[in-house]
Length: 375
Image (tube, rainbow, N blue to C red; front, side, top):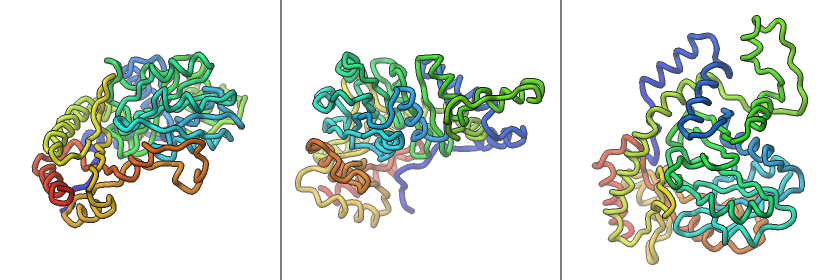
């Protein structure tokens, strides 16, 4: 039986919560979404959280909140899922690709500063694979220039930056609840922010710019006496109450998920270290949830494609490392500077199986296969 790269930790409690939402008769955005928003904001210690349909839509709303529009430039890592760059492109703005440091796969002040121009409106920093980016350091070079830092915390729920949850210190942050993430609602995302007026605007924008939500209209005299207005063009970026019901259960399990993944990642590091592979690790400024446990193949190892194929033959499902957007067709040739670390990481790294229910016996199978193929 193949060992998968990821299995969400879902069970009977999530199934019952979803069923209860269905039985309630309110399955669209409603009271459970509001409850999930409140619980997620409390977990992070932020004043406002706005649930949406995906992290991509969360990023799009975050950029709108940052004032990004047509012709603006937004500095982004190429070393990230393509949605990071796409969210910029959707608004008619230009993604400007920056390199990352090898150790964390994240942006640094040194990689972003040379790309700032008078057209730079924002920087999107990414907690890549769950490794928390040094937000404070990036803000120190961006804020004096009037550049907003948006945190793409898609992978970051459960990670820690200087004793605070990753993303909680950002003016605007976006989270993902895709099944590859620790906390999943199937699909879904969240925008968090510090500003109440911005949060209210984002709530309107996620629902076609509607001045009064469907849930609020229903609560007010059955909706008969409330007439909504539409003051700007909005979107259909809503989360359902079914998803939110699952999310509430998942949020309660998040600490246990993080603890288990960190145990397994430490064991990988201990047992694979002698082979010379460099496994992703905690940065000096925080701790990772190990959403993705990637390693950089050492010099002299077989080609990554061969390694992945031979792992599959041995019943181990690994994945190529994190993609580089500037090497994909929509952004081919768009990079303004050389991105050597990005290109090394995306071609020489791979992602190992890591999930809450992974057993030590299964992990030993992965390690033994790697030792035979790479060693």
